[in-house]
Amino acid sequence: MKVLSGIPALPLDTSGTAVTIGFFDGVHLGHQTLLRRTVEVAKEEGLTPVAVTFDRHPRETLTPSNVPRLLTTIERKVALIEQMGIDTVLVVEFSAEFAKMTAEDFAREVLKEGLQTRHAVVGANFTFGYRALGTPAMLHELGADLGFTADAVALVELEGRTVSSSSIREALTEGDLDWPQRALGRRYAVDGEVVTGAGRGTGLGYPTANLRTWPRLLLPGRGIYAGRGLVGEGAHVAAIDVGTNPTFGIEPLHIESFLLDFDGDLVGAHMDVEFWSRLRDEVKYDSPDELVAQIADDVERTRAIVPRTPS
Image (cartoon, rainbow, N blue to C red; front, top):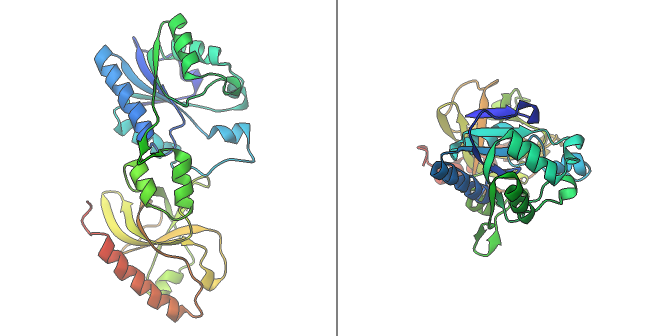
């Protein structure tokens, strides 16, 4: 798959494309519907399937005081998009200059001239261009003038609830893993680099892998979770702490995982932490011995919930 960085990377060398556009945070079931539709059109019409996304959440430029935590890094998002069969991803810098581009200019300069668009697929709530004045209806009209077609795909609903990145974020913040799993079509996971921690876990008999994540990435609500640590080709059952280590004094919110039945040094490795079930709240204990007893219980509960063989 090709990953193009910014509008200057255009024009795309192709005879025609089917294009979908969106921020695609989380690449949830709604996004997957758009991507799948784009790939279907491309196959039917002999086109190249392309996804256009952005290097940051638009609010980071438009309303920097109100920017949500994100469900995926740009690298993870691109990888998930690739899994849907997309051939090319254009990652646009959502700068202040780009935010001033009109809907008409975007359709002409990016879609028509840059991507050689023959068909565009967008969500029913899609907006684009300066002050978000562009709508699916406008895209259809502009496409008719520029020589491409467009269709808007209805939002995906599950049991009467609309699938959206914001609803997934809200659930995760509350420690709810059920809705994110259903809305994403997979378990929620975060990724980062394993770094050296304070070493307390080793002293307690439960050495943990401390994960340094992208600062903008959303961690589930504070608490203890059962899940997996995915390193390279290995998948290890893990008891996961998202918290501040209150027993030893308040620290910045972070994530650390005790990998069951694993003995090795992971510092410097890239690891995905996959969340399966929330076990309990994070609690301040009166002594390290009380904490150790609780961790032992957490480990046994984790072992009962998460099978050693990936399913």
